Length: 116
Image 1 (cartoon, rainbow, N blue to C red):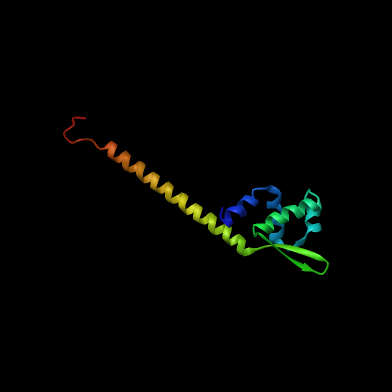
Image 2: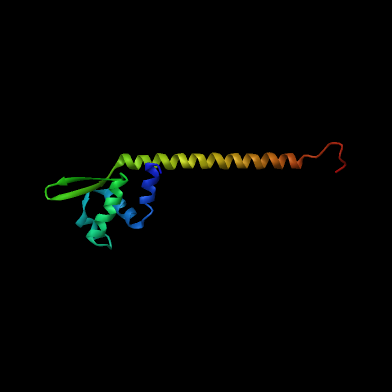
C-alpha cells in the first residue's frame, strides 16, 4: 500500500475526517479537539495516533500542551495520488468511448455491393 493509499484509508473514518478538517484551520491540542467532537479525549488521541502514523498530522510540544496540525506536504501527496487516479480514469473513459465509436462506425458502414 502506498503512503497516499494509507492516508486515504485513514481518512475513510468520518471522525478522522473531522479531525483533519479542524486541524486544517488551526493547530489544536487533544482537549480542544475533544470539545468540538462528540468523542472522548482518549478516542481523539487514538485517532490522532492513526493520522500521525500515516503522516497526515504533525505534532509539537508547546509548553505543557502538544499541538497537532495537518502536514501540508502529506495533503499534497494525497492530492497527487487522486489527480493521477483521475487522469487514469479519464484516459480509460476516453479510450473506451473511442473504441465504442470506432466499433459503431464500422457496424454502421455497409458493403457498397450490399443492396441494404
